[in-house]
Length: 156
Image (cartoon, rainbow, N blue to C red; front, side):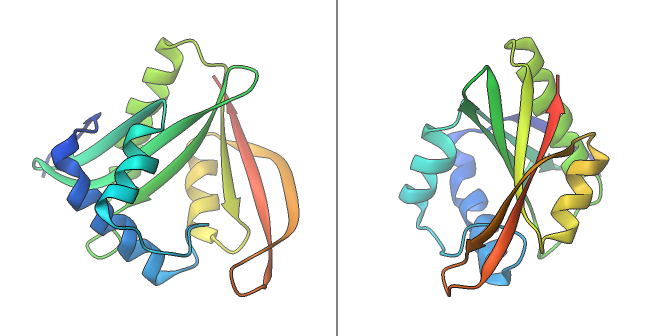
């Protein structure tokens, strides 16, 4: 098995949208609560971000990471990996590509905002070197359930 990461390409979009939608259907590991069609996914996770990296297992997309511009030369990150057929190491490979590109572009920090009940997400960003930065208390989910959002930050 070979894992590689590269900037996302338009032909990746159907596979990445399917991966995103599966994660949304599972619930609990993303702030997104509704599935998206490919054009909506493209607008948000391909056209809008500063950069997007796709992680590939033997040339097949198994995850992606997008970063969006923040004030003060920062970025906000979103990460998704295949939850149907998890691939060990995919998150680390795509983050190394994202981090290197962010440093090369001169950004000074990356924020990750994670639902407090997303234990795997909190652990992932901690493993990648992020530290707790802020908490937004009781942000309501679509059904009204209050859920804290924890912001972790990595200084570059």
